[in-house]
Length: 153
Image (cartoon, rainbow, N blue to C red):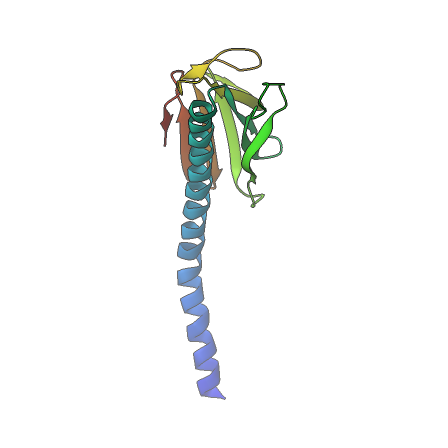
């Protein structure tokens, strides 16, 4: 019985030491993954604008913690927007998502790219650099879409 108690106490000490390190690693991976996903969706919107020869939109909604790319793929450019790829939703409620558009906080943004892959300001697109910050505790990752359309991770 004494040996069993010793093993349980040792296991408790190891868990107390390793637990915070494991959580810290989880938080870092969560923010990095979310930022990578947003950067990929932004690049997909930019590339789709070039491919289809029309404006593509990157939509970011911080209230629902979602982001996605859309483009009008119809032959006659009817204005019906198709979602390109899946709508990305942050899986963890612990992951924070903040959006800054042209230096001001915003709950949503529509970032558009024209046929050259450069940022567009046509309606309903918004101008200025868009910065999205993902955070879990003290781990932070940022994605910036410049006013020219470059995606900086």
